[in-house]
Image (cartoon, rainbow, N blue to C red):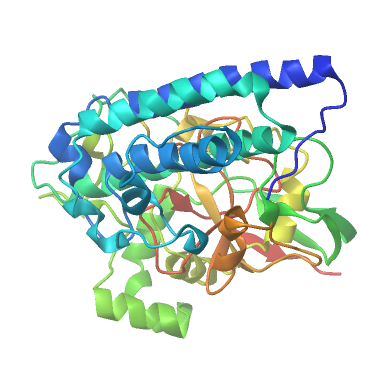
Length: 426
């Protein structure tokens, strides 16, 4: 389930409880701040099956704490509303029947205010319970906080997808000046070779899929010093990148033709043929030096082929990233404009998640936890690809070099980009 440092003394246990209480308030408050600009209608609508309404995110993250912490570890706790377990369970088969995911947008009731009241009830109960919780229950609180931080990012990308359907191009937050930053020249960073260890080990939180730590063999390779930027992607488009099957995987080419894909998601051309990009701060001229985002694995792989390079493996990416600060770069600190920035393009973390060519599969020795929380990651290890790093919508401090994000190869509504790799002569 998780890996956390052990509490071996009353003083250390009290310190952990105090830290979790502080973090609980911070995380739960930020989620509310992110939805503060939304109306009840904004928070109710579902724009596609892959996205969830903002109201559902608010409720589900509360259901997680209510179910796995309060229900299972606090004697005498009574649920806020017995119907909420059916409405706000996501995919936990062990927790029984649930409302169909594609129909979440039909939940006009309970209202947004009702959900805020639900959150307040759960928050108060968790804070009261924290000093008396067992280590196992505290582990679940920590898991719940990291789970909610994942939903904060999903919340933002789902709101973006929803607002992109509106022809008025509404902004969630006012735009701020982008500035004028020259793109750093593309250079190559040689990575460690031979036997290298990857995966999480030791103290601190990690999701189960990040371990066990294990050895891998890396042959000589290099990664680009920054992700591919918008200007470079525009050159790919101008060179016919979306109409040349030579660069595309067979499934990717079929997807491009079937869906009529001609540019990254949220790109559109103005009357003069220039590129614009829609974001949480509205429709704006494309920043040529900012990292390209909202691309699928298929697009990333095609671009890499066009550029005479390839996608990195997740092992190569982690071997280089291990020397970098995962809390650096353009990441989410507070509610406000969220957009990839050119002035942070050279950071290993932040701005955009980076596609790898690695399938999302278990590491050697992986074992899912017992019970419902064991369904958290392991059941999804089929047909998806790993992304590494973090994005402008990732809460700062919630990732590690070993963090494994994962999506299906056609999905691109998240802040997804790419960093090129290439083989070196041995």
